[in-house]
Picture (spheres, rainbow, N blue to C red):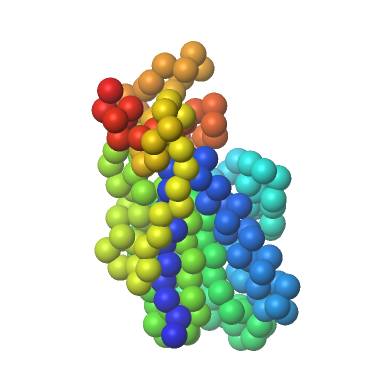
Length: 190
């Protein structure tokens, strides 16, 4: 039975690396995982790339008007080996995209594995994450450590070029370790 999975974690939790390892495992078994990411994640063009050097080409850049269900249905007609959908940076998706992913699971019987952040730098849920928390069949945390102590990191903070915390700004600012750090709740509120 296919399921909708949401794997979430703070920055530095190796979410992308985990997603790419799953895609590799499907390939090793002669199956195919369709890889997707939101168009807003323009850091590496169409590549899905982890900080440790793993990378694979995305099969779909999800734009605001992308019908993910139609794309998967049409792709399955062309290649019956499609056995899994993997979405990286899923927090940037909209509600309608999560509905499409639910339809992929329910109508096409294909498991969907989503990887992303749960909350933004102010502690608020991203839209994609909000709907995955509501509708996913299986929700799993990928853990990492706080950059300021030895506790589990559950939050992210945005920093400027001097390492000072930023408290305001647009929810979405695609960045890396120079723009964000993962912290525990204690350090998020201190």
